[in-house]
Amino acid sequence: MLVLHVLPTLDPKAGGLSQAVRNMIRYASSPDLQHEVVCLDPADASYLFEDSFKIYALGKGRTAWNYHGELRSWLNRNLKRYGCILVHGLWQYQSFAVYKSWKKTRAASIRLFVMPHGMLDPYFQRAKGRRLKALRNLLFWKFTEKQLVNSADGVLFTCETEKQLAGENFQPYLPKKEHVIGLGVQQPPAFTMDMGMHFFKICPELAGIPYLLFLSRIDPKKGLDLLITAYQNLCSSGQDLPSLLIAGPGLDSPYGREMQQLAEKTTTIYFSGMLEGLAKWGAFYNCEAFVLPSHQENFGIAVVEALACSKPVLISNQVNIYQEIEMEGAGLIGADNLEGLIKQLEQWLETEPQKRETMGFNAGRCYAKHYSENSAGNILSHILIGPAYERS
Image (cartoon, rainbow, N blue to C red; front, side):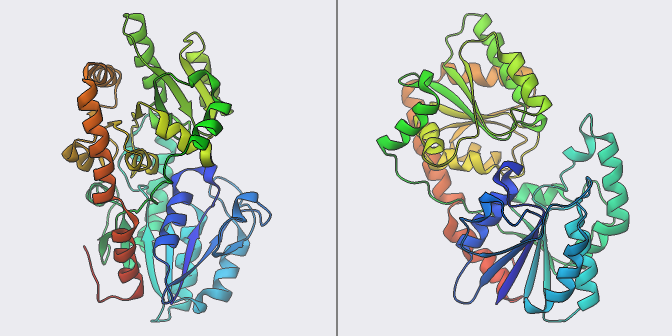
């Protein structure tokens, strides 16, 4: 069977959705299940050429809605080639276009699934500074997204917490089926000295010294301002902290520039920009612990990558997979506010070396138990291939 994935972009710099789709296609591919993608990326974008699956890149959309007139026309012409359509994300033109084309085609053999990737989370309706976007989402829900979600054959979630939160803000929320499919993350390559060489070439100041790693998109949602402020407060009080590396795209955004200015007087805070390939894995394997005080994180691929490298994770209780991590003893969980983050960092500093080593072991075990690709691939494949397998 041929599956079509529809999403705004495959650009890794846009966030975790693009990586999630790549992971899903890799671990849910078989002779019986093949995948293609249609997206609104330039056809010559360099990040598209390393993928082995077929990609139809129609060019960039326009406006905040990411409108692209060719997408709906392309869907009308091609939808019947597919046995299953999977829409990734909401609130942009791709979900509207898919629903309209699918309704028009309405062949019984074409099943439709929606994967919100956390975009139904109540955070986005309640967060300060998002009032206009929250109002926009309510209008979009009323006129477009409600029909898509409630008409689809199923809504797919990465974890139980995401599923539980999905219906809090938008009514009527009446999906036919809800499936918790997980999200498998590829086992990282085994550590090699070459990884360290690539990483320390970018960050020579960190060679041979302990550091905490923040690796994520530089965005207000990630709580980076809290992390920098908490770190500085503890430094000012005389605490002997490891260095802090902030890695990820977005340094040239207004928020990214603000964060660099906030940290400029603290000589043990470093910014590397986005790390990829061996340098990224070198950053993971050489860090003391991974830290992400996010205000909302649907899954957190970087969190799971840290677990897979057997690194303890210091995360907020707004990262939706925190319960599994807490249960497995794979890190420390804190509140997504300044007081909670200071307390969390102090707790890490007070943790004995042997306990830290145990946390690292537990982190690797947590990854293998909950986030490996095999189990996620089996669940997703069964759902896409046919309705006989159901997990709700």
